[in-house]
Image 1 (cartoon, rainbow, N blue to C red):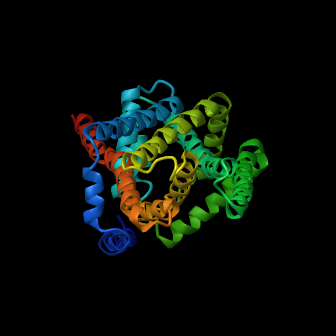
Image 2: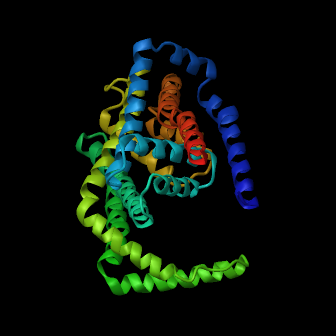
Image 3: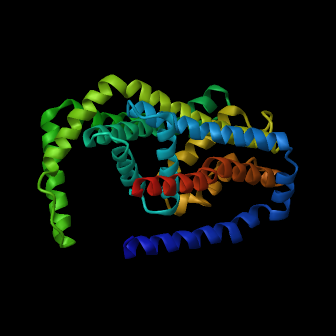
Length: 332
């Protein structure tokens, strides 16, 4: 980890402390939040745990459909390790370890690169679709207003632009060559600044990856996107069940409003301000789900914490065990 990454990570931890020591207690006391959590039954906790494990399994399946021949066990193991590393280390470590894991299980480099690219495309499209679907849902159910209508228009525009550019790179060979050459020059300049040798075959590798991704998109893109949507839906239902478990029924928060909040929280999570976006995601969800009634703040925060426990925290220790178990077997 570079010095800059360490500084960013320390600042992130400071931000986490600020959120949990000063900000959240200003919204609702921890005594009220704890009382809300203690009111949950064993059955409700078991349901949330089951939904959390279902989300883990769904994410494992999304890895399987992106890499034909990968077992569900290995797919789940790789996604758990990715979650563990993303929570603790800078972005990119999870991709490097997934690549190494797939290679250790006998897959060729081109297969692995294509599968990781396809999974990224599926996740990318899902994240772009989420705010459009969430905003549409609140408008259709009559829970939205003019602000949501404007957001829907902006979301559709962003979707068209952010999907159209990569699509052109895949479709048009001349644009792909131009992009690869420019990327080669940018990397060469960065290598010069860092006083390191630049890869000489980057342009060739980019173009080869494009061809492999083209083939993968033609044959597997629909099922990869479907798998990502199912995994995302499983995660959404954890938030939905958490809100219902703390007593926030449909008369207070409809399913469409929960979906809208989930979409906003997911989009905001693309930029990891803190490790695992701890504190940031909670504040965003509380802000979007806020009902303007202070007496309900403790329930909203409690539900948000439950969601984070079963979607973000649960995979971390499981991922740590999976990672070190894989390392030990690889070294044996």
